[in-house]
Image (cartoon, rainbow, N blue to C red; front, side, top):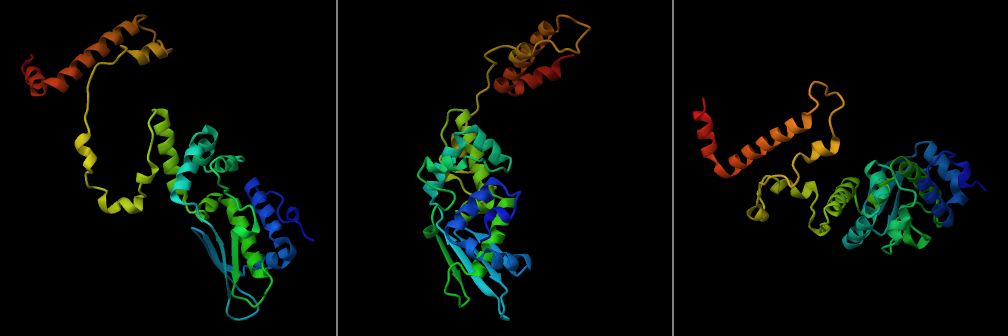
Length: 273
């Protein structure tokens, strides 16, 4: 019997994980036939959507067979919990934002009662329009083989299959990380995709009325300069920090005057010689 170790030696860990599931549902028994179909480019029109992978496979007859492989998608609230779990670990966020799949990502999903990868044959529905009564048939196996290659090249397709696209996941991860850095919480249920927001993109929301601005001097004068120290390239004047501190204080004074005096400061400037 051909094993998955004979298929591809350089596949990544998530592809290994996927093929472990495939072995559990009996794909290995018909692997060679499915592999030959895939290698002969008999699989076409493969599409990965939320909850469904579909494709056509050219068999022995003129009309191709249609294959569908289904999986349960995560509900919105389940995805929200998963995103929070992912964003809580800096390594998860960093790798996902760099388009990499963290090797222990399943820990984040299991912590909220989910599994990114299917854990049993019962989690997948597999249908083919051929007359073969054995499931999976060679046409379904061919789809699994091509799907494994696509997941190996782009692990985010697995997220897509579970109901969340790459763009939305990365956007929500960034928002969660940014909110966490400021101690705020973010309501992911209120986040709309770009496609859903196009019609209202240039409209001001109701919250614009509550936006306020406050201008004030810094709590610590020349804090950045004090933190960084005297630039190594600065030679002419040893007291650059004192000079720059006075300059910064002058800039702050003028900024405060502009913020709270309005036209008065401009009229005074116009009258200066």
